[in-house]
Image (cartoon, rainbow, N blue to C red; front, top):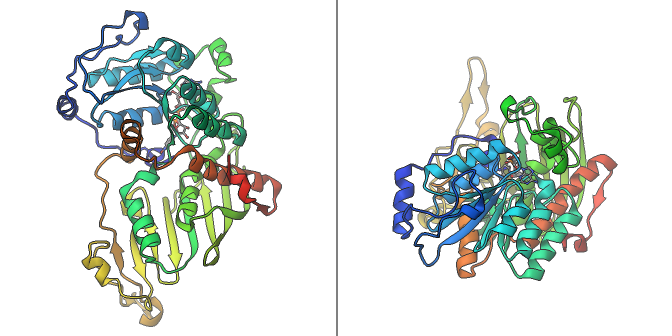
Length: 457
Ligand SMILES: NC(=O)c1ccc[n+]([C@@H]2O[C@H](COP(=O)([O-])OP(=O)(O)OC[C@H]3O[C@@H](n4cnc5c(N)ncnc54)[C@H](O)[C@@H]3O)[C@@H](O)[C@H]2O)c1
């Protein structure tokens, strides 16, 4: 998960902001559709709309569905016309939230009913648990909709492959929610600095981690218990499984997939190729009531044009030490990135590297902060030659929007204007292979080699 995995407060859109953006786009707020809880057949006639208005359905209105809705409300001329969720709690929460901003969406429990009843949709946003992504995304594509589907594409490579094929066969767009691919800070760092300018020289090693403090299983308000017949209908054995799906093998891939999917994707982006092999160790060592590994450490080997490089990844769920970030290290410098800029948003230059001042003058980096020259503590003098640390060269690009908004904008631009997706299904499938196979490597307790053709759907 991205920034929302940590769920920090994303600055809330105000009603005034929304009305302003709707008005600019010629939308107005008298939007059509049924009120929450009304049947779709009672829908009011469509209100006047701008020429490029997109009617969008959201399938899955849980924690991430709501984060995406919040971002979509900031994008002009995107109208959330229908929402779907099997849980009344999520339906009500999202429906009421949308109402606050003038979107009156038709509400469904079952996505099949939504697809049968809704006419005139252009796109669907799928934010359900990983195991139903393929079924729902494929159905939406085959119903003629463009789809934005959350990561991980699926918890099964066969199902992920079906999504690539469905997009290919229907000619519809399928963007997968690896939102760092559209984050201007990440694009600047990886495309402009590491790849175009060779800022780091040869990247010899990468490291990423996502460490979280221990946590209890998610619960639910008693009032919103789903009856067993409904749980059975949608494939969940219990409320515990339903709420904590990511920890169970049928529904998700555990922290390795949930969190690693964002960061392992970046290794391939930086190295410009897939991993050649992975060796991993991990286990279910701390929690009693999970199925998936609660910690994994993995080392990927990459064969780049310049030679062999490695990337080390770890995910921990018993300590938040260090939080989450990615580091790329080369013979001329290193670069630290995180979705939260305070945790990573700077480069550091090796002493022998070519000068970076001209890059700072050109606005590609900010000037170097003062390096630590020497350090003294009460009774110890530490030699400057071993402690001298390079100063940080902060990146000059900020993202003054919620983390997922640029990725959604990239998707809606592609739908409207045929521009390229930043994370089309084919690309996401490649990282899905690397990520899902890592869990297999933990189980097999051996080095797993990848064949290049494995990354093609
Ligand atoms: N890109 C990111 O940063 C990011 C962050 C968090 C989650 N995610 C992804 O978003 C997806 C949802 O995660 P979440 O954290 O919101 O989980 P969640 O459990 O909070 O929400 C899932 C929602 O889907 C509903 N649901 C379950 N099965 C359904 C079905 N068959 N049809 C319709 N609705 C169904 C549930 O009732 C719930 O409201 C996952 O794929 C997850 O990996 C991505």
